[in-house]
Each structure stands twice: as structure tokens, then as C-alpha cells.
Length: 179
Image 1 (tube, helix red, strand yellow):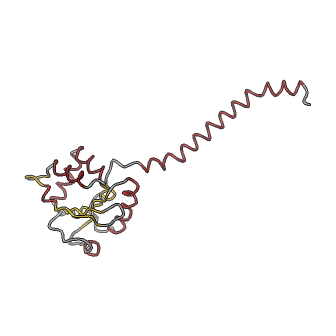
Image 2 (cartoon, rainbow, N blue to C red):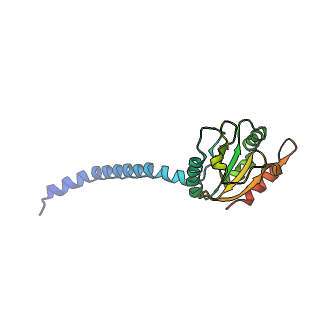
Image 3 (cartoon, rainbow, N blue to C red):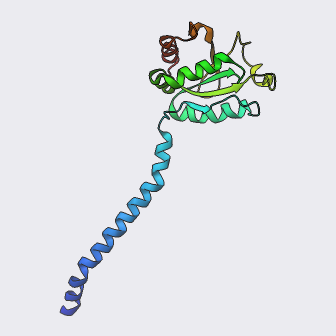
């Protein structure tokens, strides 16, 4: 049986032990949060719909679609391939329309992960594009399921108005393809 002195010593040290235990608990909880937080942060849909932004003739569109597929599956979205190039005036007008209209961008971001795929004299990406219809013009939209399978295409000239893009048509397009 412990002596009375042992009980007094235990009672004197008890608050100190509790402080250490609380500190340890807080440290473990903080460490767990720091380890788990990045995983949950990546599962949230991104405000930036672009997986690949810009028409780089050196990129591999098959690899880009594969990477976009992982993100689209995780975020519950489809993939929008925008075929075009730096030479394409309407590609630049589309890019500006998306960048400058937050409502259009939000609708597109809610529906798609976007992959810009180069189509130029420097690199026609014929190996990639042969799997789809011949584009009637540029930019051209190819709509893919999150797994990369082809769903449809959109002639972007149908979304134009005057010397720009019709915001209502862009919003309707994004909503029509929402999964």
C-alpha cells in the first residue's frame, strides 16, 4: 500500500501532468489536421477551371486529358477541350470573355475542367484530333466525360454575337453539359 507521502506527491504533480497531457493532445490534433487538410482541400472543386491554359505545341494532349480526368472525376465535372492556337483571334476573344465575366467563368468552372489543346502549323496534334470530328473552325469545343470518353462537340461560332461571345449562350452551354 502506498504511503501518505506518495499520495501527496501524486496530488502535487497531477496538475503538471494534466498540463503536459493537454499540450500533447493539442500537438497531436494539430499534426493530424495539418496531415489531413491538404487531402480535403484538393477534393474541393477548384475556382480555376483550367487544367491546361494556353496553346503550347510541345504539350501532349493525351497526357493532359489523363490528368484532367483525375481532377474532373474527383470534382464531379466533365472535361472541355478547347482546340485552338495562339494564332486564333477568336480563341483570344473567348479567353478574354471567360476571364472578364465572372458569372460566365463560374458557370463554366462549375461544369468543366478545361484543357486547351494546340492546333497549329507547328503541331496539328493530328494523332489526338483524329479521334474526334473535324473542327468546323477555331476555337472548337470537345466535351468529354470525366473518364475522357467523348460526349459531344460544339461549334463555337454558334456562341458568338457580333465581335464577341454571347454571355447567355456561354452560360446555357455550360449548364446544358452539367453532369
